Length: 370
Image (tube, rainbow, N blue to C red):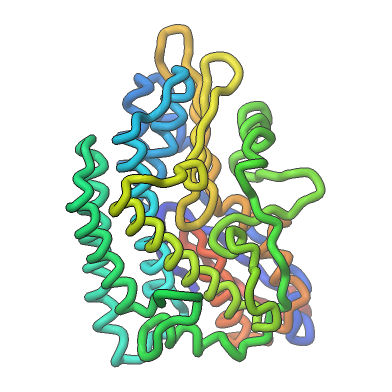
């Protein structure tokens, strides 16, 4: 089973014995050398290129690149640019979360919700593009930002995002998805070990110094996770089924982001550090980190003596969550997933709620056939 999300795939091979997942192997198959296209370019080209190369969360990629370039030059965004960047990051996080939930959910939505969901997603996309357009223009009109934020909020509400809490509004697409998992007890609950700003120094140092760290990141003694579930630290409803808790975390993250975006448009004030940060790295280098829909995204650069990019590294959230010894694998192992199509269905739900940024393919086999 495959869900097309972007370039490359993640292969998920699960061996089942007596309906339990007894072995899980996760292997990413991404295009190699993607970051080499940045090397040799002028630093100011990196944000534009990052926004063009990545089909998902392109604005977040661009902002992370911009922050890294500025940090390498010991500079920072001015207030106007920071306002636009914050608004764009929040809006993209909202849209990407909704898009992935609605379009990638493995069980088809009831017919009465499917057509409306597509229309509401198109409305959300139009609002996102308006906000990003204002951000790229360099001067953000707060009245226009407020109007676009209201349009995005209306679309999100129509899809089921509540004004309070994390329970989706009744008779909506998100409510239908919650019904699909609210009695699913296949996966045992686990609290996440969140990747946070306090980890940036170690992560960036390892990213710079350790070959292959971008594809297999690690922190000693930890199974780090990033994304909405990790950001919420799974604070609510500890007795609820695990998949329902993950879904509620995504819904709550959208609601919080909408509240922050609305307040930003109204006042112009926002604590940008909770969304994006940056810093220098040894030599003529810098990094940028942003909290996008799928989690914490890092860009790290080095500038050579000729003033051009000498090294470029990107660490995506998916590499943490779908690490071969990461939280997805830990959650799946020993779970009673069933066999055949039942197993594929269970694993698909879990994978979608971990929200990879690339397609995934699931292969399930019985231990006797392994």
